[in-house]
Image (cartoon, rainbow, N blue to C red; front, side, top):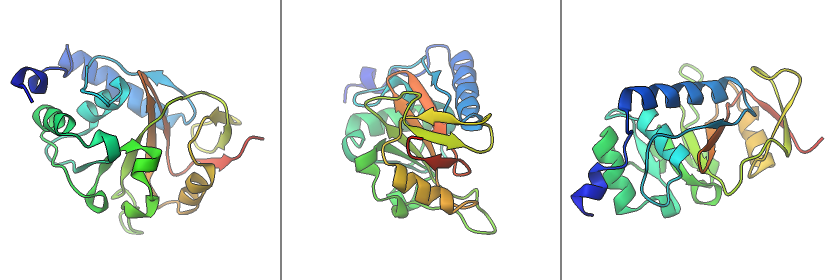
Amino acid sequence: MPDQMRFSGGFQDAPFDAAHAFRAAMTVMARPGEIRALTGCEPPAPLSVAAGALLLTLCDAETNVHLAGEADTDMVREWLTFHTGAPMVAAEEADFALGTWDALAPLNTYRIGTPEYPDRSATLVVECTRLEQNGAVLSGPGIRDTARLSLPDVPALQNNALLYPLGCDFFFTCGEAVAALPRSTQIRSRG
């Protein structure tokens, strides 16, 4: 990979862009079903802008990252390593995993935490072809009444929620859009 490509594409205004991305990430995690825009970086293909911004914001040299499927390219690895220092690991060791839903499967590959340390679970960043406020019905903490979100596999995500307080947390990205699904969220098929 040419050095110019490896070293470029990070946040243009790092303090501002990282703060904006962190706030957006925390907002969507606190309000499941809400969709926010994430911008400020130009990650290499096939990463979406939102996925790149999430990784730049939430990962560092102590954050194990797993890249799945088409996301696992030399260019993405080098870009992420240069900008965050995050080590690339197998799925079983990941703090964060990135890929399409099919590439990330099966979910039981990832850490779900322990009763003593439920926070020691993986967060999956799922690249989607669409991200809309329709589809599955969400309820639980951070949601007034109900919310809706287009989810890739409702039964698998319902099974993950049954593990609460254990389980994985999810970010869903599409272009510059991001939404989240914490493990505490209850999910119903279209209601």
